Length: 509
Ligand SMILES: C[S@@+](CC[C@H](N)C(=O)[O-])C[C@H]1O[C@@H](n2cnc3c(N)ncnc32)[C@H](O)[C@@H]1O
Image (cartoon, rainbow, N blue to C red; front, side, top):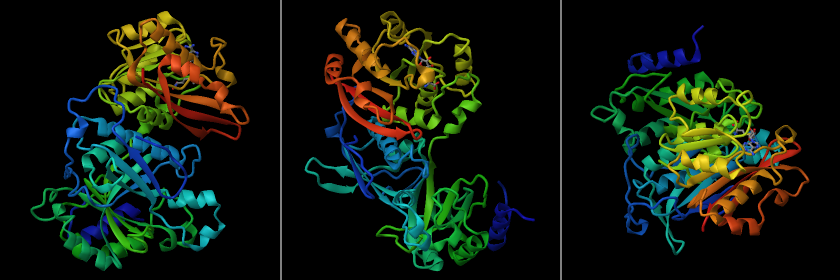
């Protein structure tokens, strides 16, 4: 029996005679969200003043125009822990880091999300409110606009390059699409696509005329089979017969592509969507180009690593923390409770030029430093500057950490401190994040800054349900002494009784 991929490829080949090769200001759970990113306080000065930069539209290397509608397919649709708020926070933070890139043209921006799916189908009546919300927002339209001081949103300004760079570092994004055209029928859609000129690059004389390509159908909501209707965004393979029928109806378009079809590893992946919601595309058929995918976090999954510990941080959380910390090239990063160094691995994957240091109290029998180094080496990631054995609450251990990065203060402290019965070490009198904040103030008082002004502290704070989270957080007086300002906190439920809160502080003094 032919597999689905082979038979669709064969059908395409027969039809088209082709070859067969190979600044966040808050969040909530409304359906439409707007995040304002202003020129944030920066860790290092930029070479030019932002207010002097002009806004330009750039055509990216993978797409014709930056103004087409973009759509994000999120990861973690069903997982409450990776809530929509978490996913959006990771993306907006990653985007803000890209905006801070001196090569970016963006002055300040507003990022707006709105649901791409509609729950207007029979099976949705059986779904809970949470499931309906999760379903509708598994795919979201995202628009990024210039944010003017007078709150006047002008044209979409972001270049595709900035957007692609931001998405590539996000663990909670599966894919980013760009909608090329829409139509009432597939025939219409083919016609409208040709007229738009947005896929001309794949035709004779176009810059992608030699590129391999593939096309897939994705049906949602009432367009899909009843048993698939309530399914969340992920496993949305549509019936092969309907994929073939849709492609056949659109042959006037596909016959113009000059590259070979490759359903396994195509240079250009096109998707036909049916059942999208939202004002613009509601009920219409849509063709979209895959612009890029999110980060491949599975390559640092604990089970793939040589260093095995009891409490490795999951890669999705490690990436999210690094993004919320706004990692950028060349920054110095400290993890004072490093364990197997999941955070430093994620940091090196996001930005190879960071200089990282881990402090870990456990002896090599529990957390083997050589094995950690091998985990970096085997993935071709830049090695940490040091992984120090010691108690990070001790002044001399922190001095040693700074010595390994030219005796300069860290730009970022990112950490997943001990929590739960297993992690109670008895070494800390204070809750771990309070201890880190007190270390920052002690070093500041002694004229040995641990965290640079403009730097950030991003950490998880564990919380048993029913316990007062404030007791595990630094007080206002602690923060003032450390020169820190509270920025934000967001809960991530882990199980029925335990949550952790992602907290962010900015060093302002
Ligand atoms: C939740 S684990 C960190 C896990 C880590 N993110 C990973 O991916 O493996 C907390 C770690 O902090 C270490 N630790 C506890 N108290 C410490 C201290 N005072 N100084 C340094 N490390 C400490 C523990 O041994 C443990 O490995």
